[in-house]
Length: 247
Length: 346
Image (cartoon, chains in turn orange, green):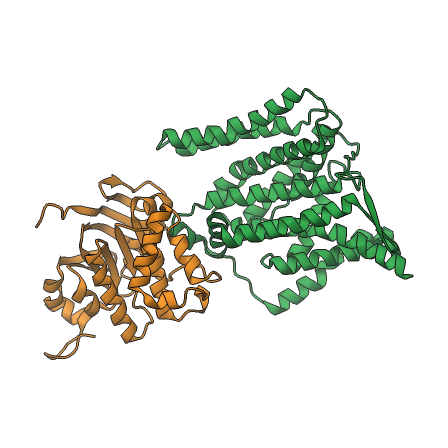
């Protein structure tokens, strides 16, 4: 492991509760620089809850440090300013505003020169968005909305992009496209924390993986090891004959 | 009825309607951004109008003391919020906004020493004072409870209205006041006589609407405000503070309210509680616009103004009743069109 691969995001002993029900228990999570980490698990395992709590949307008991700074007590907006960005499950786009304005607001916290570069970068990653830049976000297809949500998050030049179920409800061909772009982000210097039900696709592009069940991490390790783990294969990947396509 | 009366009533209705349109737009803006139904809008009108009238009469209005006092409280609130991370930049910004700004206005007024300055200066001072009050009102009363339900915000809003109305009575007394007209010229076109004041009402209303349209359509902060209105969580996720959007919305609403007051006070005598009734008519326009649509609100405001003008001609005793009855069919139609409205979860 190289020296620059230090922990970018470090979550220690995290508990998240809805009233008396603990949805996340004693979770330790680490994302290093230039790394794609995925959290896989069944519906209701607490993956989304964990991401929302790391972003500051839900209260979290435990430690969250990001880029060497304790961010566990600061507002969502300050976490954004620190370089943490979340693409939530429901995307939370500005539906009645056009694509370009959505992207522009993604760069709300950064200076104009960086924003101009971000526009170029995002339009290169998602040429489709450039074609649709005058269109209202609410009228885009599901896949385009997902691209816009990712593009908007990238406009702020984040250090870590947290993606919550980017493949949910999308056609397989678009899912493949989105995962390809996620793996390209790593090359562009953006670390990714990916929460997915589509474990197969996620494990293919990830460096490391955590498996979440009933609010706890039950397994973690290199993505390739997780992908060949008997229990994971049985629970999340299904039985497969050799040579069959993964997606 | 002959054509002259018809035209006269229409002219009257449109002049009032233009002011209701401004107020309605401010209400829609504040509700969309903060979910607050801004009942104290009426006090912004009164404070704007009577501060202007007092300044023109060479008196020191009590509203400036209120602005300074509210600024101090707002600063204390800021310090309490910052207590965990007391950055010098944040504190300095808070001092500038909450302490220096109102004291500077007071300083200018003190330097004028009760001499009635010119009309433009009085208008600017009145607007600044009311803007400061609006800004601090959000900071003190609404920002700490910004995440609560619409009902809680409404109750707080009613409380603010009552408190500010009480201050209005203390500062300006129970007697009505009038202020000097912006222009005393008049032109006659056919049977209609347009006073300089009514032309100022049209001109300023149109200028403000265009200004707001440019602000929301072409500036980053305008777009950020729209974004907060469309999707509060989405806005936070790109780093737009809900409190910043709320402050801008209240600032705009208080300035719009004060401008409306300053436009009306040369036409009608205003009492400490008149603003509430005027604000309510803007509210009716905003309700007809469903608290979301700006063009519908502006159109409805003109309608409210005209209905008011005609009913004051035909049945002046029932003028208010007829105007406020307008809201009933709209509410019935809206409730039929959308049977169940769920409160937004936040």
